[in-house]
Image 1 (cartoon, rainbow, N blue to C red):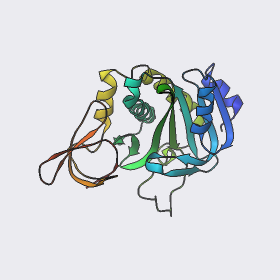
Image 2: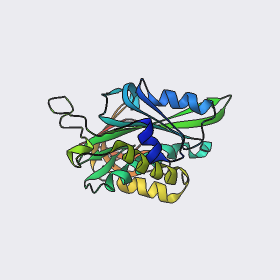
Image 3: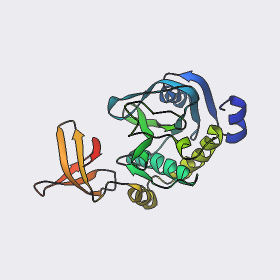
Image 4: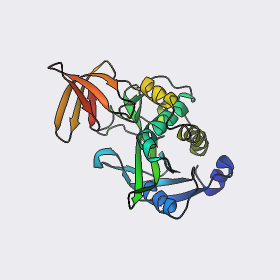
Length: 248
């Protein structure tokens, strides 16, 4: 069970804020960042009612069912493309350490178990007069959400469907250590290679909905800063920066 007392035990001296209920941990973390939160500070909540996802999606996590957190960092501008990668790799490794197989990454940074989404990641940066002030890295992991009988029954999964009775406070502590390790190496080739190795769609048919239309073809490669390279039906290479991807 999450509580201030339990988090003090598992997070040791790490600065954190715990909320029973919040609209968005990213919003709270952003305010804290602007007030001078140290790098590595974490905001977490037991319930999140207006969480944000990629492409403007919203996400509600009922009390006690998920691990929601926002991690504060202040990267160099050139390292911004790698913040989401670091989050994805940190979650991937944390889940694999639980002994789970079939864990992979759906481009650009969703974490899946056997093709079903278990975690979403959303980095949000803040600027002032062209200067990057910092980033909050939002992460939401399904721990014990019951998707049976919902529209997500075949597309989403919770960790406790594979590993029962997880301690969310301990899981958060393990994830925080991986976040520390990878966000300290944002520009390292090792991070990019680890992220690329986790991707599940390379070499496979894909369909990607973008703001300008849908691209279908074969996912051939990813660029160093995260763009996906797709060879379309005409044999033309298409570079995709953002979009909603599905396996063909």
